[in-house]
Image 1 (cartoon, one colour):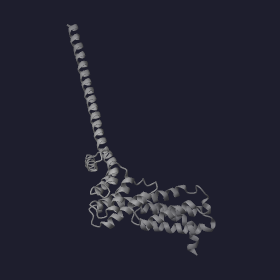
Image 2 (spheres, rainbow, N blue to C red):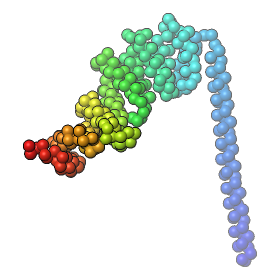
Image 3 (cartoon, rainbow, N blue to C red):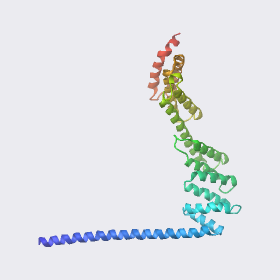
Image 4 (cartoon, rainbow, N blue to C red):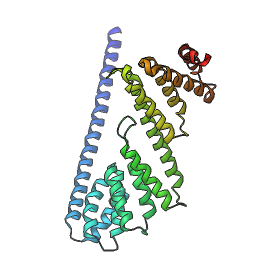
Length: 305
């Protein structure tokens, strides 16, 4: 009886293994068939595209490019449109071919090329059907290619200028709100760049030179932060810049030669009072008060005279 039971269990195990193997084999076949189907489909698409590309019928090539663009086959559309913008120049398809080329480059994330092509479209067709959107996408393409704040921000400045031009040219444009939001975001990136530069100077401190003979890094921090506040007076990083200025002026006073020390302690003390007045609820007010006490040890003699 026990032997019979063991045989049944053994048979069930064999059956389970065979079922599992059959399922895996079936799934593997499905994957293979799907892969073969995709290869055949892609091969068929490639053959069709090659036939269109070699065709001398530009109207046919133009319609096929439009279809590729509509279906998101941007690589195929790009190849055709790069030829069509030359061959179709002066025809009724020229304007749309140029705009589609710009949009295709944008969709392929070639933002630098897209910006140039959108700009070319607007310069060629300032009253064209897509003039407003082309002007917007000049800025948008540059916006998408702007680097992180710690890197050179020349593209960011160009993007702001492009969006500003769009807003000026089309004051009632449907994308005006988006353009303005983009400009604010780009300005924040410029502010962050300036803050990182100022903070770097502060962190360098006496490094790369003897600060007792001028305090170059602290002075550079002060100048950079002050220029940023002048250029972007409404930035939400205003307190951060002011803090760097206050700390740099105090450190500069400490490292100064005797002939400059007293005046710099006075400047640092005034800066601390200004910080407390402008940011009375700041967590850094205690630091400002501490600096004031230390500065007074050097400036108190003048105040009593």
